[in-house]
Image (tube, rainbow, N blue to C red; front, side):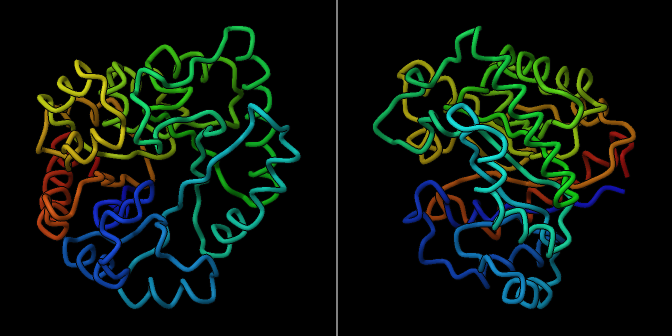
Length: 294
């Protein structure tokens, strides 16, 4: 079964809390529900206690899909990471989530507006094996301890950004590590999301759908903007409002069961969240049907 969820980053930005900082959580949840979404990922305004969060989400008809967790497995081992992740994983388990979204950020630059994307970290060839081994052990532990499936979020400005990075990461990790296919990050990072979907279908357990405004992407690439400046300029938008052929991508995910999440960070002062939430849900619903997934 496929369900369509949303990420609150269209209302309030986690990397720049001042963007959408004035928008109440209740407004986000209400507008997401009105747009047709039935689940939400975590954002910076969400209580991190299941007893407080559950009634809030229930009031607006949402389940907790999951939420981003920043790993530091380049600098610490799996046991230390598991200890650091306890509060986050416990919340997900208590809320009934199924996936543990993780991304390596010990050397990431995506949240630093002063650094251009060309400054992003490149992992030396000799470092990949240990990185993969640690991630596999961590994923095994997360599954065994909390019953959660780890899904890795490739991301601009991090050590797993390009298509080659994703291929290397998947090659050095075991089956316990699954992939979060993010159409927007894949496309901007130079990957073909349809190829990733086809190649890693058996290990894709979560999908983020955001589109790319091609002109903004190429200007950012040419002028070497930071990730956040690119976001503020509108590089991302909701499915159907950019360059990605979603039907082509989704056709490669025949048999997929789980959440597909509209996660398109934009400046709410330039892109009204309620308008884009409705557009994203409408378009994605149509693409899923056309691809034969619903």
